Image 1 (cartoon, helix red, strand yellow):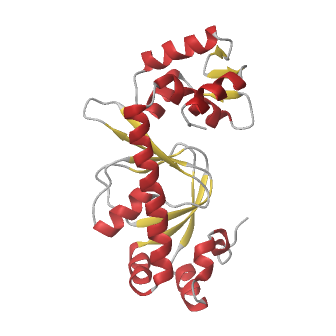
Image 2 (spheres, rainbow, N blue to C red):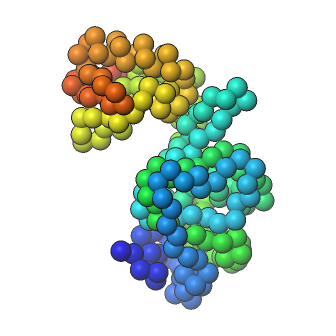
Image 3 (cartoon, helix red, strand yellow):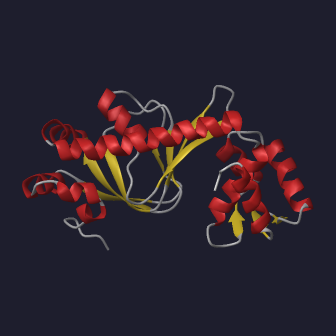
Length: 225
């Protein structure tokens, strides 16, 4: 269990803050817990706290005017949310939704503490903008994938990513369609082709990767893994 004064050790860049500023950051922040499935922020809401994740993952997605949900990125333990950072810096409201994919524990840094440290600490500013720059690069890669990469390549890479060291992905066709910014029917057709190649087996809400080597070859052919 991370204690209230120990969480800074989880973020290497923040360890370089002078001791006085570390104490100010800890005193001006709070550790919060959020249950899986909770909507943490939504379009139109103001960004009042920067969350630094200690445990769990947060999924950030946007809904188009036609109602299609488009996955943008995940925030993992040890990371912050770039959209929240952008909204706090620009004093704008959220334009996307963030949902806890699992039980989440995070440090909530209120706007007053965020503004004070950003104004007087080069180390804190570097922490903010480095994280921001990394995520912007990820978003440009996402745009490149959507525009230029074939769907079978992208799906193979995402299945391998979601499976990790295991061989089972707990996901519906609609979930995968949202992850990859496409239609459910496209995912269904592509999975059917993967199954024909004996790379996967499907059951309700699950995809079993029976040919990870084949999926890996397809993904590597386009530099996805």
